[in-house]
Image 1 (tube, helix red, strand yellow):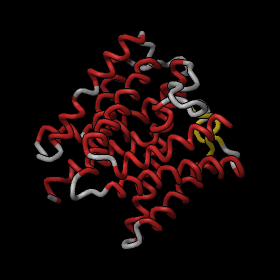
Image 2 (cartoon, helix red, strand yellow; image 1 turned 30 degrees about the vertical axis):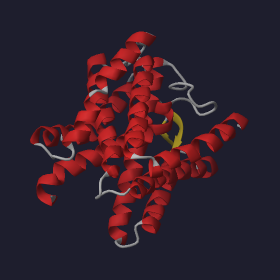
Image 3 (cartoon, one colour; image 1 turned 180 degrees about the horizontal axis):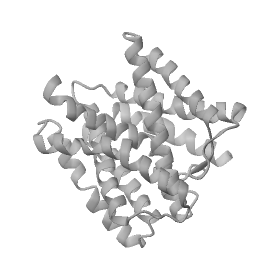
Image 4 (cartoon, rainbow, N blue to C red; image 1 turned 120 degrees about the vertical axis):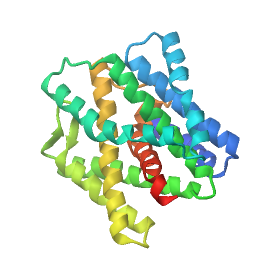
Length: 268
């Protein structure tokens, strides 16, 4: 616990300073480093040797700067790719959950997992890159992350106090339905506090973020359980790896980027 507190006291102010006030090159460089580090941990979990994991991480993340460039142009190829993200989070990943729940020895096809990761990690970078434009304020990114954190905190504390019915015992034994509902409710309340103009829209956004954050968290838990590891890495003492810290963000961010591009022909 002491390690966790010290790490948090150092990392949190640094994170906010970079996200809110860093110049554009440093901001993009920070998030690209996060993407590469997270990809490295993913491939290590998938039991790649260290050197091959770094090569795979750099190769699979190389499309991220291209997506950042294309996001200014809203090109048809990128819009077409964006349709894959809802398919991943709302169809393919839940199917993987069901298969793993039925068979604990299920490891999933390596090609499938790499393909999923390619879209997830690159669209996540595209998402955070949006917030250096005139249209998207960096404070908006912080607001979204606060809603994700509110969901995580609500699920943890409500689950700890009231949790009885297991949510997904084979993938994440500590999660309960009571914690899930508590996280959703608190995320919706925080969304309303941060976005007061339209309460109905705020509630919908809070619910959507909470649902996707939970799916992202379960996805990482499943990937780690397939490999029999507890943490994705040890970059932050007491907090695990980068993947452990942003698992919820990946689903929320990549889906938000996909929605932006899918709807862009009608809203731009």
